[in-house]
Image (tube, rainbow, N blue to C red):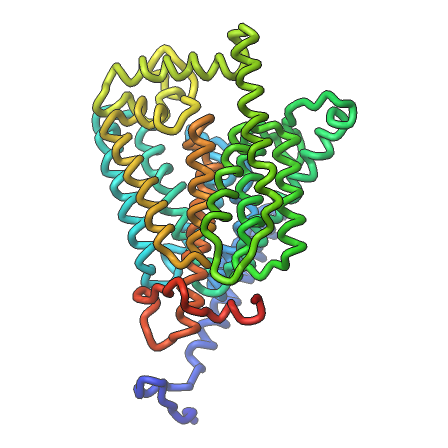
Length: 457
């Protein structure tokens, strides 16, 4: 006997008979169990792999956004993995998997800010396509796709998680590994600090992490903690405690670009506050201290006359990067030229603009600047409840990129994932407030209240 029909809000008839659906689900379950059993009979390892894949597929089918959220911790993992001659990080593979889920099963349509950012990333891709054509080699082509994944793909991943209401979960899971890394940095750096002779921290556990990568990652966590947007739901004591922990980890690592990047992010957050929110001004006192420390250490290295210290080495690399650019001023010598034997040099330029200039030439640099400045403009125009954090993390990354490597997997993708989380949270809250309008057309006015404001004033 067929169950009676009901009508949806639009007036169309919906059949409530779910017998066919249940048969399909049952058949899929029996098939999955059969595959796992056969794989286990063949080899226990393959059985565990098959069971893991079935579990992952089931989770994806039930909630794609939640699945993306659970992938977030892996986005901070920097260990390298070589596959088919291509050297990528664990973060790259996790981001690619999350992007695939978001692309196929993620919410649509994108909001206007997300669409604008994707167009800006398209400008950069178009500008760097010239160097891919002019310099045909494998690493060049792979990096062209990889670079877009780190920015455009990362925004889509963050958007998909937060748009369906999992922004808080995704951010918590993204920050959790940073807590572990910060604690590890303090443990490793404590003996030197207590002895009055602090040395830069290079982690071996939970995985190998260079001091600059360590500092950059913690700087993003500190920016999120200090911003403490309403949609995140963190209490003030928890957020401020995390900020102090991450700042201490950066100090232990002695990552100079992370210090300056975080100082700029703090200034952005103070100068553009959320309506009705008051942030502590205490971190502002640390800004001149950080600037003084960086200036002092750079001046000491320049005065030492040691041409092998990090400051002199960077100056040498800057000069050599310009020499590489002179080989092809318009289109550059190719993306990741330092790994492909394209020149006599084998270093990645420690500056964002010089890296793009040597790799993709003047055309590529114009595209890069359009993309980065455009993202800042788009985020600035978004309601401060959501856009200020997005501006702060991108500004943070741009400052870091003036003093060290820019196109590095984790350090580049994390801020753009956070941008996506901010924009996804905005669209989710806007839909809850006015469900009768398409989410793509909702852009909350700076003075408009949102559902997440309730209980946080």
